[in-house]
Length: 104
Image (tube, rainbow, N blue to C red; front, top):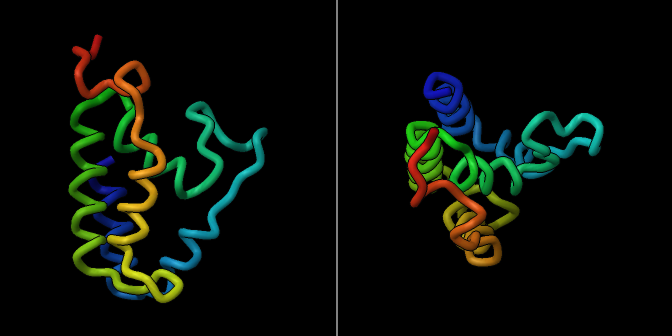
């Protein structure tokens, strides 16, 4: 997972125009996969809060932090503002994420 996120970050930083494709990412319900990820917002929320591995959540957090520092293109807004707004409206209840639970 770490390698995939690092590669994604490097590609986005090298060509910020690709961030627009990330925002437009969508899948149908049938193709959402085992985690039910249908769009970029769900990918970020699931990566930060619901994935069972603390290491994966940490890698998502680090990657998004680095992206927020480097990428300024987001339909005229900073990537950081996109993240703040997304997290503000999607902050999970304790029973919706694994941050305070021991992974089994």
